[in-house]
Image (cartoon, rainbow, N blue to C red; front, side, top):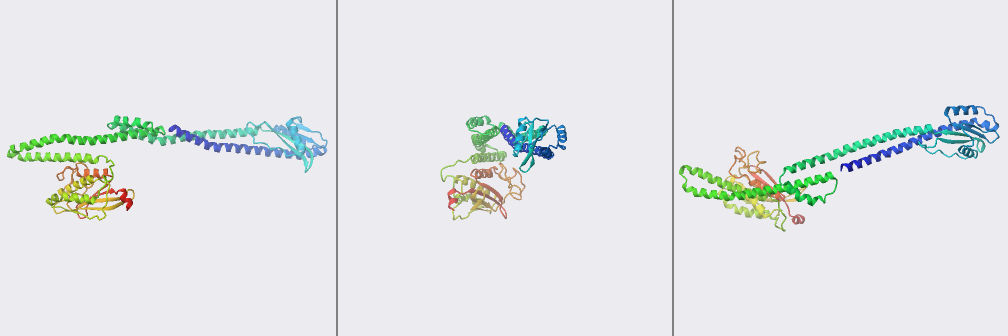
Length: 487
């Protein structure tokens, strides 16, 4: 890519410089040629005036003296001929010269002298100028100057040399600029590619990820080498990250499964040991049983979290949509007895429209189970939980279905709303000292599961304080395409 970029910039720079240099050189040569022609025309007119008397009556006056001085000063030849009988005179040239005789013939015929072409360093060394002597149609003779072009050609050569040096300097400048621009453009790409490769090498399963992707995609890559290398590095990193994430989820799930058997054996031994425990050890035995139960809850939540974080695949029509109000009614009825024992009341708002959301019934049931369980445990007696469904909209995502679960219970301590979805973080009720691990009993994975389930279904989660006290969990999901089109 650097070579191509340098070539394009260099060609463009050379074209721009050439577009200025060649017209400038041509203009300079043309101006110097006009100056040369005007100077010789003036000299020719002066000698035509001096030679008028000699051509008519043979009286030279100052003609011969001026002609000799002119030839001696400038080194240019001069000739005068007469049609009235005066002898022809030539200084520094011969009338037998074909170019001189041809120019005299044109002048005696009162023809316009052919113009001088633009001079160049390789133009002829002399140019013949001729002018008739006389007035009007009366031609008494002709005067000829054989002018040297050496000085003019040298001036043009020097001017062109200066332009050439400027041309080369400009081309070199454009080359340096092109090199700087190419480095400036490509350096970030190279740095990103290098850092991406280093990051990829630090990830596990790099060999597996790169081996499965490189061969399949290398043949289809096109474009500059730097971008191909960046694309390959990104694809390898992407595969390695996905492979690592899948391995992590499998590790969590496999670990939870493997721990179930020894945990079940431990619980069985604790239950068998219970009748044989002495009175002074019963309290420690009860604590051990409680910790075993808590460990079982953690393993269950870890399994649920690993499942919640797994990518969702598109199923058949209807498998990934549900009516949130119907799910909320069913789960509120299921939790009715537990809520009554905790002094909690569940209320589900009416939704006459029956809005649908792009989330499966099973996932929404699991979300509501976690939220209802938290309310029963932490909201406190006398609290009321309200579940509502409504229509929201987002300029980026279009029409959405919002599901809100709010309560007027104890709420969460100030400053902990940002932390409640962090894994294993157990919040503290409002008014009590906050701190990780200092809150009420629980695994600290419930709201992490909720967040994972909402995000894996393309939803958005917002947790905020309920005005007047309590906690509000608001979720929004995309509305089904057919429903959105129909409304």
